[in-house]
Length: 312
Image 1 (tube, helix red, strand yellow):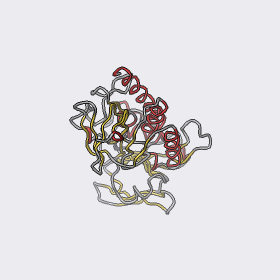
Image 2 (cartoon, rainbow, N blue to C red; image 1 turned 90 degrees about the horizontal axis):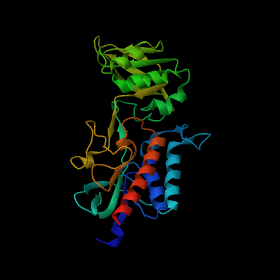
Image 3 (cartoon, helix red, strand yellow; image 1 turned 45 degrees about the horizontal axis):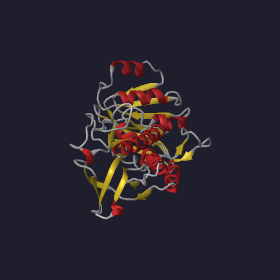
């Protein structure tokens, strides 16, 4: 083990949480090291216009925003490598982490910012039009669909919340559910069903997202009862079938909830292992916004700095 492979703070993952943690840790003279993961910049790199992040009055492209985040953190001393961490050992300190090329690193503290991945149906057109009419975040993208007709796929609380929120902008929202009953809580069902702008298409699935090369123009549907197909013209497609936190690496290592989100002390970002902290969507099943992820990244860096001071 070379001295260059030992770090006071090792950040796993990037995105708003990781880069903000790197910025604060670097400014605290902790010489942080970051392995970005498979998608440097996280989910925002698949988003086009970001208009709800403070400081960008004209909006900013998601990928451009993440370049700026990284550039600012690197300016103050964050070391960034475009690698994945494929194995960790938190059983003793210093912690041990292995990158995907086999390189072993040790660290006095670790900040996990691996994010979460929205679930999709994996049907034709979904990935092609991601960020161009296909979304998994009504709060992020609903504003772009004023007076348009939209589709929300799902039957749980998330789908009801997304559909209800989208009616602030859309002229109509179709909720497409493969069953004839919802999994959502009673109060969320009642709210959605009372909304005049929401129409439910029961026992129906989306088979393809259609686009014109620049954006979504509709979806193809299959009625599971009649087996009939039809095309539904819409301007946007919102997947609301849940998120999967990127925590497979920490299975049987750190405490998680039943979905897989890392459990952290509240207030604070400490996980169930001292010296290991988590920030952003990997530990946030509620808000999942760039601004809240950045805030958690800041908190994780401060928590790590104070913890390291306590360790001497």
